[in-house]
Length: 165
Image 1: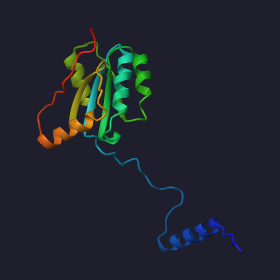
Image 2 (image 1 turned 90 degrees about the vertical axis):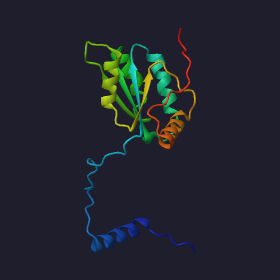
Image 3 (image 1 turned 30 degrees about the horizontal axis):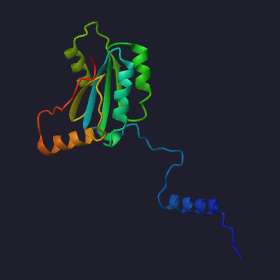
Image 4 (image 1 turned 180 degrees about the vertical axis):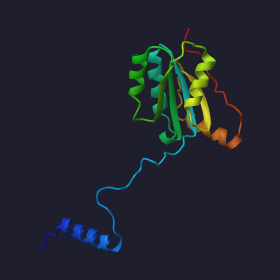
């Protein structure tokens, strides 16, 4: 004969016993707002300017990297089509650490934009990308991080070929 045990009753008794031993509040008093997430190792900075399709391709490439998502962040500085670029970026908000800002300055000098994207980043290393870049190797960030950590170069530059023209 199988005897049915009310698991809720057992859980209640266990909670009561635990409470007597170490009182706690059941209302959820844990405050996690001061807990900071781990700092990403690589910041991928992108200056986006009027190329939503190309930006979407690049973000897709970054979303499919083998490096764990918490180890890199993507920083997008929009210097072009405001809402169109923002809607592309919004598709990736829950996939990896993502920061988005719009260029508020009338000055559109690339070096100024890059500096602004650096200020938004917090990784130990910075990977400078353009919105029309493609990263075809899914383990690119993982290999780049390994090279940076193992050999300590000041910079690395992958072999690339321009796809526009």
